Amino acid sequence: MRIDDLNFEYEPDVYAYVSDYSGIDLVVQPLRIGFAAEVVDGAKVHVLGAFPSERWAKKAALDAAMEISALTR
Image 1 (cartoon, rainbow, N blue to C red):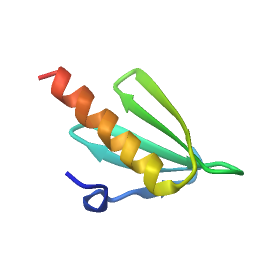
Image 2 (cartoon, rainbow, N blue to C red):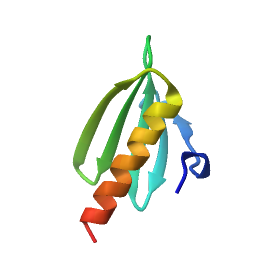
Image 3 (cartoon, rainbow, N blue to C red):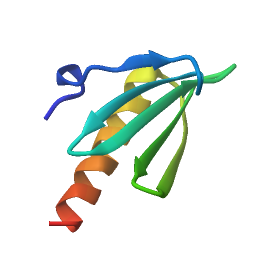
Image 4 (cartoon, rainbow, N blue to C red):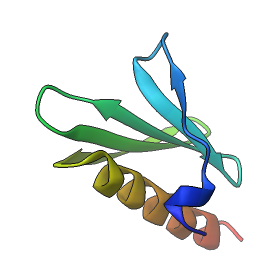
């Protein structure tokens, strides 16, 4: 899977771009400087940190979601 295959949509209630990978939410939020990324798996929130570009944040979120998905199989 590539980040270009994902459809990130802006969710105004959380001020972030959200996509889905195998039932895991990928969240990328614009900051003043850079972008924050986190992955939400059910009730578990995995904060990935801040990244200098939107693409890096999306890549980190996708990598984390793929790893979580592989561990739960």
